[in-house]
Length: 160
Image (cartoon, rainbow, N blue to C red):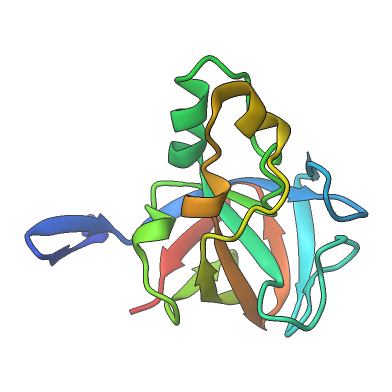
């Protein structure tokens, strides 16, 4: 029997599980991230070796492929990591989740959403090219509640 991964909320189904399309890292801030295939997340820190890791509330960033597709539809060739997100997902509308929502990914990783969207002080190249960028509206930030390895293709799901 197949599990139903949706729950009704205001008569709109919400997808509760998806997959990790890409794991992306960079050594510094203010630069796009590059797919790495896998990463090690450390509790209350973020992704080992990533320039954005640290003890603040934005240890890891996530963006749905569905959000990236909105910019691609405007004629810009963008993909995973181009918005400096650490984890690119597919199947969950991340920006519609609430702060405090927990996500389980891979075998042991547990994330807690701490922020939805961000202030973009310096408009990125994507914004200058099309007059829009989805990360300030649809990017999600999280802290690492439980660490572990995360790989492309791993399941990511909302914890009930």
